[in-house]
Image (cartoon, rainbow, N blue to C red; front, side, top):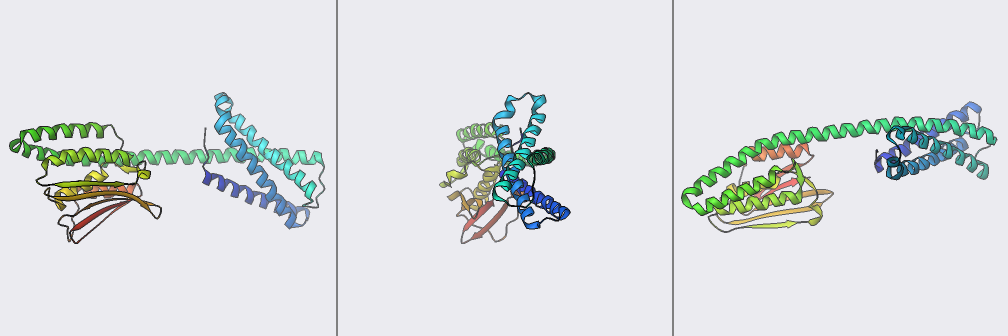
Length: 325
């Protein structure tokens, strides 16, 4: 079953109208008929064929095709396309008889013959369009799988980086506070257990849950009060983001902005100008010039693969990292 998208239907309608326009123009020139009525008639017939094709295709995809044996599905679909072409041509013929659009006198038997051939043309063109759309779907799927594999490889670079940083922090806590060290290890285990079962591209809701686990782990290392504020538009919880996107930015804010001492980290998610924006802001020491490390450069690259980008700015002790999707 191949579902045709709205944009593809619009292209098909445009193609049908142009084809009908060209065929009717050719016939008018061949038989020295008035070209304007013939062109109008060609467009009308093409529109009728398109409407019938749309109805039969959607009915077929949604209800009929699943009830037909697999071996007969292609012939059945071609038959429906033939019926669409035949019916559209006959309806065009009847419209011409009623409204006198052209001066061509066509017998009913002749109209049946022409409608039959137009049905064959419709089924042939429909089959070619089906093959083209199928190839496009396969190409899209291949690109998606390649993209996910590439992001997964990049994610493999992030995991060791994150693990080394976290284990070094736990090692410091072992000698300072054994109870905090134990809680850190348990929090790390919970975070890894959750993250290992997620795909490279996850929903914003899943990303925020990972961030909460990460925060509970890092909060054991704070030397002063640090507040996490979440301001997320619930409508955006289903959008897709690369895994650990927010965690990397929050980690950067805690270590380089607040120095794990005190302050505030605010995470926002909102839409503007048909774009989805994720922001991580801290009120730490800020920076004049930022040298991107493994985490930020990796995140920037993963976002570029998804059509997004990473920007940042720092002024008056406030630093904002912004993911634009």
